Image 1 (cartoon, one colour):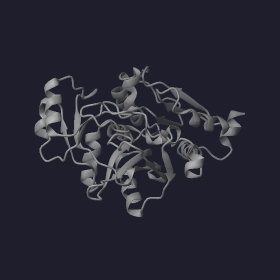
Image 2 (spheres, helix red, strand yellow; image 1 turned 180 degrees about the horizontal axis):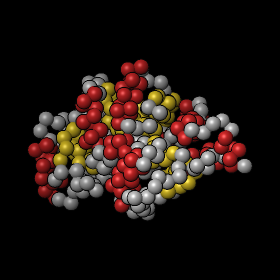
Image 3 (cartoon, helix red, strand yellow; image 1 turned 30 degrees about the vertical axis):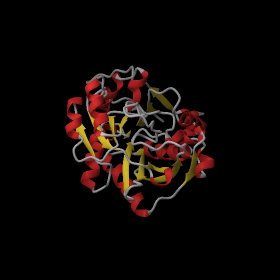
Length: 326
């Protein structure tokens, strides 16, 4: 069989995926988005499937050149008829928090109120109608990078006056309401093939959850948030994590959101606002890694389910991969 292309720049995140593919004898090739090229006139590459694992946080690892390039390459692959997982539409939504919120608005899915800005001079005006505390977060983020919290309007005004704000690689940011988590936890829902796969609750101790993907927030105004408590890594960091099945309405909302986003494999996080009990969806991840220690947390190995899905999408018949590998 033709290989499955795994397109990724992070050196470690996908080792369990590679191990499962190898164990099944499924041929695959690894492509690096941070150093890549293609010819417009070239024929379709010989891939049975193309799995996009490019991360918006690549700019933290000298991979900024891969972010917008990937949009061009995914469009080319789809034009050539190569089946893609988390293709062009998914990556467009992955690389814009503003587009994610616009989609939620169109679907009637509730989210923390936010305004979109492209220059720090607009932040104070944009704060009108928002409840404080607020966070400023880059439109293209990843791993909680570049998110700052402001307790009051004066704190925000002072930060603008000091200068030095960085809105990220597309010079666009969200000014968004900070949500205190009722019960001290958030819920992360993973999906596969546009359908519910599993969910986890992650409980916090001490500090509170902020609006980036499961990060712990420092309380000082204008201090960048700590990025050591991502939900998927929570079991390794000593946080309480438990498997959880959300209500049917939540599962339906999550499935609708990923399907409309074009996300084949992804995770959605939501939080219950401790002030009014409102359930709010605050993070959409097309690049979604599965929770650490998954068998103990959720009772099964999600990488096995993922490779089942990849086999099906690649058109692999049972036994074919092992035979071709032999």
